[in-house]
Length: 207
Ligand SMILES: O=P(O)(O)OC[C@H]1O[C@H](OP(=O)(O)OP(=O)(O)O)[C@H](O)[C@@H]1O
Ligand SMILES: O=c1cc[nH]c(=O)[nH]1
Ligand SMILES: [Mg+2]
Image (cartoon, rainbow, N blue to C red; front, side, top):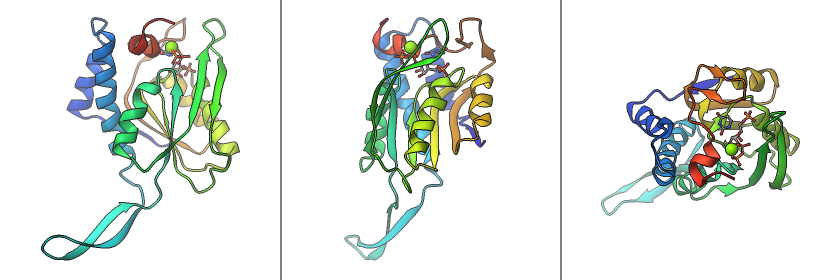
């Protein structure tokens, strides 16, 4: 599986703000939005462009646009904090929604929302979720997308654990990962170490 780590000073700075336990909910959300911009900007770098003739006030020239805008899929709750920023960057994108909650005991994802187009063949998909921990939530999500015909899927995660990367890779699903950091490990409660805690709680407060 292709794993791209965006090792940029500004990405590191925003991620450090998110990691810091003193950061309040509003500042956390703002840093997540800015980091989303950077991750998506890099993720779309290899996207196909279409050319068209345009006229500047001075001359005729070639204009460019995304040939095949992606479907953006935030995974609620935590991925919702990435959705608006991603849509600002790619306003022509469609958006689907998945809602998952990880069971604290089994660490398995419990689905509560699924709102996706039926046919995703030929459509690039960008899944937005700040955290890739055990990988259970991401594998569940990518499976749903693959069942609808998606074969060009990118997971955009601020942080990833090696365990989650292995699980995603071993799933054999057609996915690549763009992240700002591969952290050390998971702890006994399934939290990423050093991580940033519970991303949903840090954005919106405890459930
Ligand atoms: O890789 P995994 O082990 O599946 O864990 C990652 C999931 O955990 C978090 O969501 P959570 O279940 O806490 O829901 P929330 O966003 O509503 O807080 C996170 O946003 C991922 O979806
Ligand atoms: O560290 C973790 C692991 C899963 N989900 C989170 O929000 N944080
Ligand atoms: Mg959570």
